[in-house]
Amino acid sequence: MRIWDVNPGYLNRQSLLGEHRELHGLVNVVTKNKKGYSRHPETLRWVGLGWALKQRHALLAEEMALRGYQDKSPVLTRSGKGKWPTVFIYDPLTQFQILAEKYKDKDPGRIPLPQHVQQLWSHHKYSVMARDPKLYKTIGQRVAHSKTKADFAQLALELTQILRIPPSPGGVMNALQHMWGYVSDLDGNKSANFYQQTPAILLRETQKRAISNDQTYLLNSTALSELALYIGHKPRT
Image 1 (cartoon, rainbow, N blue to C red):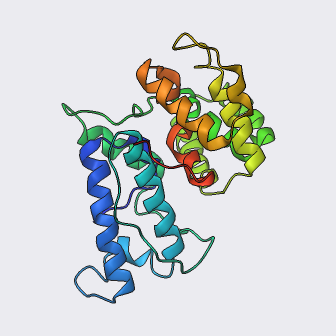
Image 2: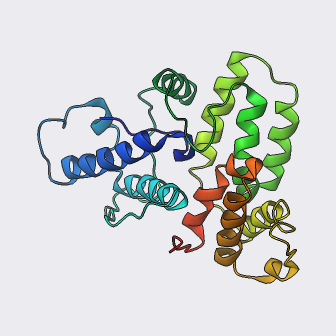
């Protein structure tokens, strides 16, 4: 039983759907006091944190929707609202290393596993921008001079924790408008009016154009799926 802490965009198809199944199993163990895995370390760290399990499930569901899958099994647990596990079975850097070993000779996730600090930061930039523009600039300046494994480990942990913080509506729109700049002139239509559309419409069109035009930079962004949690985005039909 494993619930990852890194963004679901890094998971390949098998791992993404596998975690989705594991999470539902974990919810049953936690909410119905089932034995078996009740003393498993993964179970113990989620006890009393039903809200966080619901959020993680929502992240998985949005990533699944981006890849063409539809989730029909909501998670309704709400205990411990606003709280996430304070412990990790493996720290985020180690999770990346486990996935790298797991994916040898296998298909990767939507986002390639980061090889260095700068690549890790490029994947998370717009997610952080949506939450705190000042922090976005601060981390960007720091990353420019980061090279060591310790820097990598620190940033991986920091980004995982930052993405657990809900962004403001204004922050989401700011990030989406920056993302839109990469695809606004694709498909033969600059569509300047999209800047005045709702966040849900802007994200949906950004996703659509990024996928249809294989826009690598956005396809490698955590924000492409995770920001949907905060704008009432509905999966494409």
